[in-house]
Image 1 (tube, helix red, strand yellow):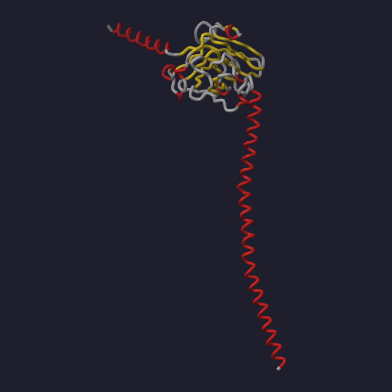
Image 2 (cartoon, helix red, strand yellow):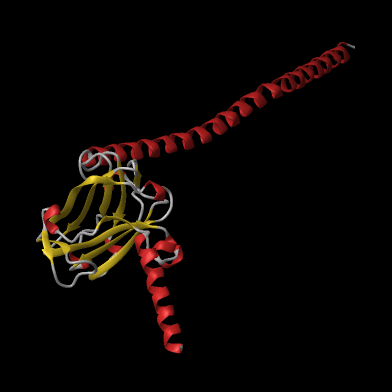
Length: 271
């Protein structure tokens, strides 16, 4: 009887885990590297039968594919996480410039895009599991009801290898995590961090806008001190005319006294 209870309990756990796992929206299990123009790793993988794999000695490792039919993840808009298993052979040979995970509904990069930065500070050598929050993606313009393109790219400074395994979307409960227990992606803060079509132009525009904002702030500061100085000068100018009548009256009185004194002295001498 005890053995039966244990078996039933174990079955319940398995069923609960299966229900939880089935609730996740699978964007791509990433078992086939061919779809990404890359190799397929069969060993040292996280899930399924394979993982997408690509090596390079410098520049940018780009892994991208279109999805047909599109995937509907609109129920996770503003909530939940995209979970990606990412392998990096050497974090030391990554650029300080962040890479990205991009999801689009345009069938290509940088158009109708929802994306997150992937920086080297988030990674360690080997496999990493990233939880990228749908509450604050860097770009958020994709139609989540029809995601049909995915791209991951990492900038490297030396010989390196990147692997991807299973990209899914789920809530905290479905993924078995808590928000405080995961390191989420950094948001895209500057256009200079967005690479692809128009990236360089956006970065230049951001630099121009930043300089213009700084100059405007300096001008505003000068304008604040300027009126005060003008007010002080105006006050000084106003004070000076106010004193002139009093000085004139005093001078006239002195002259009158002097004249009277001269008159009486002269009169006394004539006597």
